[in-house]
Image (cartoon, rainbow, N blue to C red):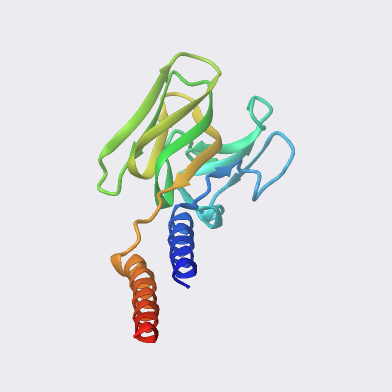
Length: 197
């Protein structure tokens, strides 16, 4: 009986730890909402990808054959003026964001990651002219949002991959199952001793 309770306790703790750490990476290709052929563009409300864990500000959706990744993504600015600082907010902070990016007719591009207190955590910048593309990862504890902007063209985000931070369980979340298992062990051990007497 004691072995069964011990095995149940171990199984419960392993299950609890596994369920706390089971957070999968999210990849947004920006084809989840729109899927037009190349050379289309739409203004965004900001909430189009909220079910995937992000919202956008100062960004529009594009389909463009010059995008070497999948021809679709978001770009900074809006359809009328462009050139504004685009923003992507994460509903749950993350510690790393991998970005497939593209720039068209730009001199310098900047992509920056910030925490909820507006502290700069990481960034990358590319200088040049014409069309450039690449994949970069921004890291930092508790990235809440990224900004992307340029000088003279547009910055496009074709794919965004991130893993939401694993929430730290409250003490009561762990303490209650552990206390229950220990209580059962004590109860059955006490009952066994009474039978032996």
